[in-house]
Length: 123
Image (tube, rainbow, N blue to C red):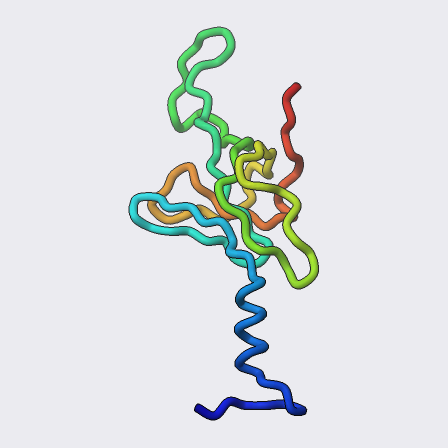
């Protein structure tokens, strides 16, 4: 088999070496579908919306606020030389109307890393 060369270097061998050192991005399987975020995207599972106020009053779904906290379920590899700072399993605070809904999944949303406002750490 003949391989392409550039300046006497074997490009196929170079490509295999690069693939051997590559790290696979974590993915999330939901209902038989695998979601693997690309670039600086982060897949977040949002918390359940509040259905009861602290005073005990039940709220209808239409009156409930959108949740803005969630748990990171999958992380993309990042952009070129900038890896993503959040890790799978961390609790994060996100913009209330930011992100892209995952079709067929009410609580899953895809966010850019810039849309994540903070990592929530409890003592």
